[in-house]
Image 1 (tube, one colour):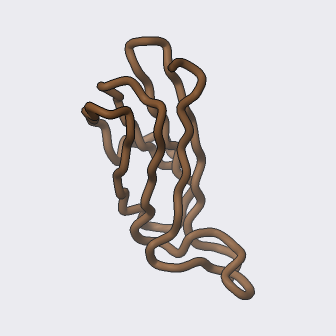
Image 2 (tube, rainbow, N blue to C red; image 1 turned 45 degrees about the vertical axis):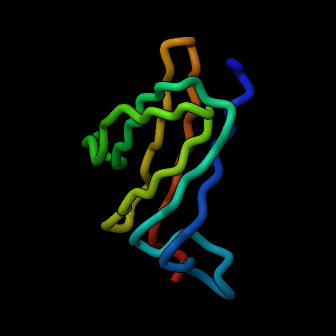
Image 3 (cartoon, helix red, strand yellow; image 1 turned 60 degrees about the horizontal axis):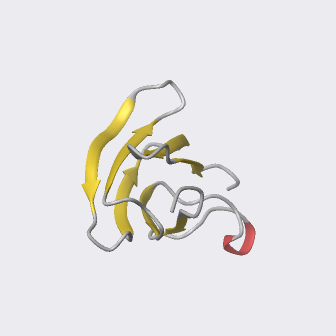
Length: 98
C-alpha cells in the first residue's frame, strides 16, 4: 500500500483566530489515518528541530490513531516512516492568529 497512506488531524483544544478558522490552540492534536504498514515510526519535532516524540506505532489493520500535546505555540513537523519506503509528513501550527 505504499503511497496510499493518508494522515488527517484535528484540534482537541479548539482553534485560534476569528471564528475558529486559524491554527490549533496550543494543546492536544489528534491524528488518524489508514493505509499504513503494520509498523510505522512516528517522529514529532518543534521548529528548533528538538524531538517532542519519537516512537514506533504498531497496527494490525493498517489504521493509525494518536494524540500529541503540542505546547507551546510553534510549528511542529510530524513525520511517519515505514520499512516499505513509506514517508508521510505533516506540519501543524499551534497558537497565533489571535
